Amino acid sequence: MAYRDILVHLDGGDGCQERTLATILLAQFYEAHVVGLCPLVQPVLPAYLRAYVSDEVLRQQSEAARDLAQSLKDQFETAVRRLGLAGEYRAEGCLEPDVARLLSAHARSTDLLVMGAYGHTRFRERVLAGC
Image (cartoon, rainbow, N blue to C red; front, side):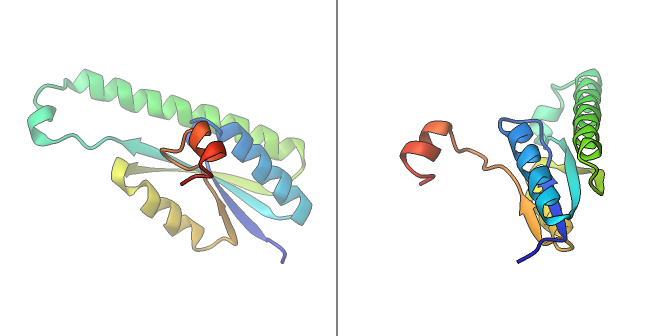
């Protein structure tokens, strides 16, 4: 089976660099188009907590998310360009609970989605086989 379009989830978390490299190498092998998707996650604050969080804190958090997205974009585009692949970077805002929905919406137009596993520690992955 040949892959023509591969989507990789860029989140800056543990394993993101390895996941991105594996995806790019796979895209190189299949001569596929690779898309890096970075969700710009906005946390959901209950109304009773929002009163205690200043606008400055929310602004700083939003700015940090944009800085991370720019860093991930630079790393992704450098790696894609270095191997001479066709690729594109996408960043889209979403609320924290909607990351899976965003990934699945973008994955509909691709052959393969590569993403991390949330809540799985290395111990759990290796010893318990991800159970």
